[in-house]
Length: 222
Image (cartoon, rainbow, N blue to C red; front, side, top):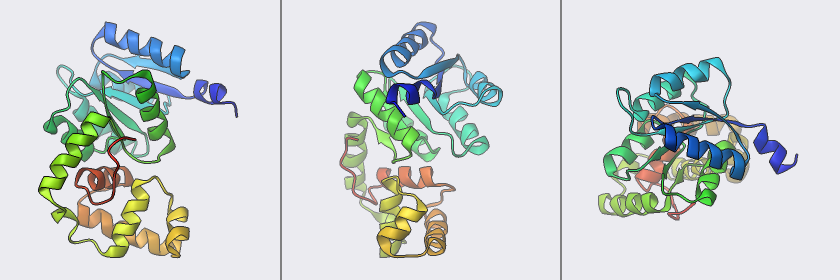
């Protein structure tokens, strides 16, 4: 399928409480990146919009009045665990980034991102290849995780770390099985153990935690 046709058939829900920001982003995403965009101006509107119309990805402002983006992200994850959600923010502080990753965000992008960076974040999230971190955010996460060490991964076996690395790169169960010469049933067993040990409930949360805690190699710029 032609890339322009493929992107035009994908719908992004853009959630931001500032009309001017939202309209500017919509224009950029539709005219430069080629995706169809629907809008919501609040976290509660976003939850309702997802139920009313199928969307392929949610681009979610982290900070909004009343209910913030992290609140919405947690509820979107509960209701639609496979729906990619990119957090978009002006802030790259630890509390925002950690909260987004812990809630299962498919990536964290700053509003200062270039069109190319935003496009890469969207494509990464849609493809399920892993978690996208804006370069400046990735550098902060890596620097902090180096200081903190890898204590969070001490309970994982070498095989589980190999599975986690491939999962974080966006590999399917079938691809993990092929790479490690395992059965898919064994891969699923390893994933259940990994989720339990990391205290997460799905693949996206596991990948985000693996990157945040530096349990797997990560170059710092997707």
